[in-house]
Image 1 (tube, helix red, strand yellow):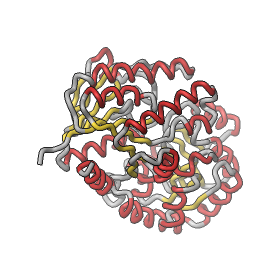
Image 2 (cartoon, one colour):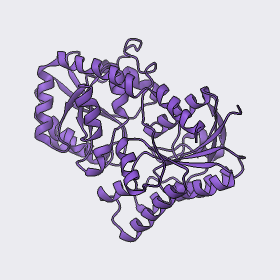
Image 3 (spheres, helix red, strand yellow):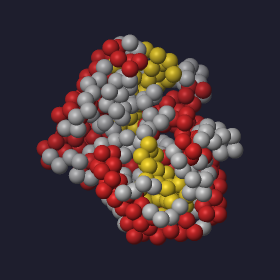
Image 4 (tube, rainbow, N blue to C red):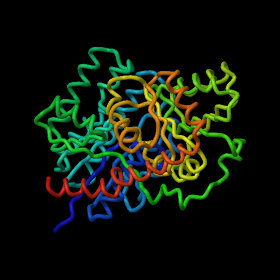
Length: 408
């Protein structure tokens, strides 16, 4: 049987560090290993610092191969400005250049586009026609719904246009894939005629293996005492996470052996640093983002993975990707995400404790309980690895997706 071909269209891809970058690349590698021809069309790497990585500046690298996957890159406008004009120029510049670059790539059986950004749907719809490819619309966040509910976008005219684009993308797609069951159910309820498949995030259990990963001095480098209990957040320091709660609670544990680490970058970092200074939180550390290959050894030396989100209905179906890596490394969860994530990892897996999102007192109680029961922290982590191995193994996820494509 002739192998099928897939073009992945995404604004974000390695060597950038982040959840969609890792998820898409890991899927591409596994589909290729199963016999599918996979290529990627993406932007010059710039996220999250919003500056083109030095090796790629001035168009020095436009074509490359990463782990056997051909990667085609097109130009993108980047700016450190947080204004709406700069943000829209960033999105729409890639919409335009990705179409110009992609139309020359030849035909594919499938074109899979990553959303958000939703606007990339314009390029995807045109390219799918140009390349004779069936359109697969992969939804990792219900945009613009989430942006509206978080108050990030308030202009009614702009929201109407965005909702129309969302509907058009779903109707044009031969298959819509959703990262969580919450996303899948939402799309099915609003667009009952759309074929939707659950394509969850997951974890590479061989890469995140606590029995094979050695410590690399993470604690000593950051002057963390051997007996400290480290509560670790790693990821985007953004609006959706509501990370202020970590600093609010940390102020209650100045005289304990608790250490709080926030590792990453994002639009909220400056405000969080100001908050740390104001509260005089010496036991709260801010560390820069690191490459994927450094994460297992860092997780090896922390105790609890702290995963908050703001208290919004839109997040009832959210499963932050950092959960999978932490549990694979046998780290207990302190989860401030209700709904689907709570059902999987707290109620079923018993891999941690839940606190009500944005509830400072509730989080304080959970932290106090963990500090008093360090043995249980370890047991939670062990149960977590077993659970993600059974339900969120990247190899099994890719195998099922391959089956869906072959029958589609």
